[in-house]
Image (cartoon, rainbow, N blue to C red; front, side, top):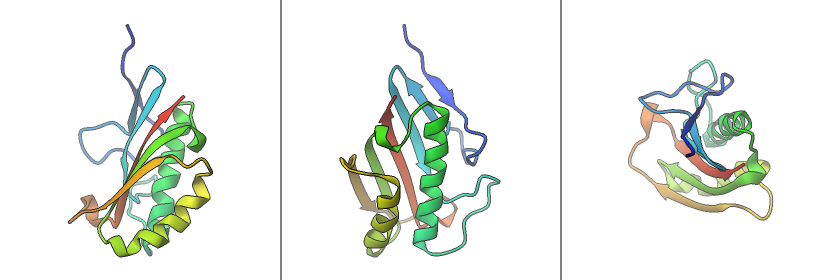
Length: 126
């Protein structure tokens, strides 16, 4: 019987609550929503593009720890506190993903933890 295994990437910021950075189950990798936190824990200062870049860099390290990469991502979810940032986030997103792009949703939310402008989570294979 397969079991759930925690992913703990030292080069990515620790979870800010009672959850794992990610978990694996069989050939699936579930990466928890990543905020624009630096590996040492401080929030990235800067515009939404800087925040998106940090979120995706954190995801990249977690995926790598699980033996996967952005080419293995099947689904991404982006949560924005202002949907007017959609185009700017897409520009950063394109730097990390290539065609065929994963399935994706992007929604505006009222608030995010730590006052972040966005949060990104992914589901991948390995």
